[in-house]
Length: 477
Image 1 (cartoon, helix red, strand yellow):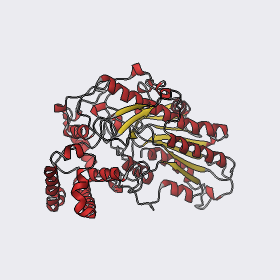
Image 2: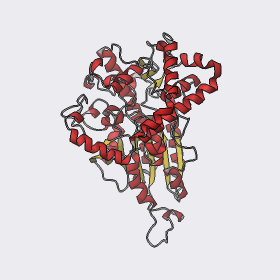
Image 3: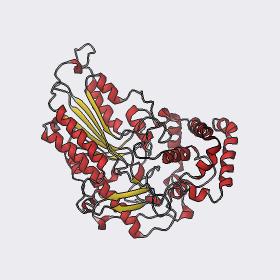
Image 4: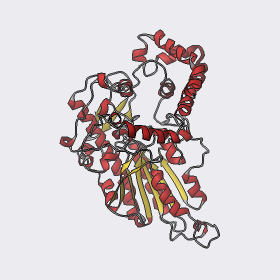
């Protein structure tokens, strides 16, 4: 999403009609001497703070460092929505989340929506996409998830308004590959990267037309686990000793946590549903973070394959390379893993760009985002763990910023739309199951808690559905 802030600059420079061409695009010519190629690499769940000091001291990321030295890095780049599909829908459409109405990982863009890549293709660029996209409705991670898990993800998203608290994830865990020299851990991503490199080799032989290449990676997103139960974890931080050697274990910081009783209700909900309210040893926490950083190192190596291929093919100086991520990864900060939070670890993303016309070794501290509504930043010398709510200290500023945001977004209208969408989708799903509904919903990922008091939770859903008629009306007032 934030990529578009840079993408608008790059694309406008590439796509503006040349003077004296009567509105014709320069791309209409047979040769393209002025037009740079564009390569966009988007990973998943990469904490943007790892691209600058002091966080970058914890893991070796040579190719991200190469991009920093030879291009421009944005120190304060943020996702508009810290969830895969909504963030990608914004990135591909250039629209705010409240305009795409992508509220969860199964509500994105229409498959026929015109993206920025479609427009670039229309004006003469060769285009190619490889890997993870996840910006259209109903296709999030469909390659790796079972149908029952797909049902769980949808239903859990729709029923967030229901008055119950149920664990939706297994306890986070780590898994080390026995083979010490294993390099290609995430084999799917490596195969996708190989395909992109092979495409570049073919593209290098065509000197008459510039190209736009997109590479989407799954890493460093935690791996889904087929196991279930509180001791197994449905999300696993998975790597090999080869990548762990890239991590400075002693530099890993154990994040401070607030007591459960002092947590904001939203944070408590997230910690509980992610099955993180139990006891964790410092070793467990440190290992989860170490494995995550190792997965980031493997991601950096895939980015490196693209950079090396461009160099070997003589294309590096003719190509704008952009690297970013859809969101970050909490990795046990605030007693959570995954994203779904506006805390730094979840919302801060990497954004680096290098190529012709891009200043080298430049760090931009300006806040970068699609909606540009982050007028204040926490001072990381004063509250590195983000445990102090500064809004209570500066009520006038908080009120002023809230009013500015409300001038852009109609809170009640957007909220009512989300609530209505959740109920409508849930009702359709419920009706499709018929008499099998009770058995199916009782055995989703929250089954550990649900099966203890199934009638209680079914009653909560029934009550939620009954209050639907007046809810939207009240929220719009």
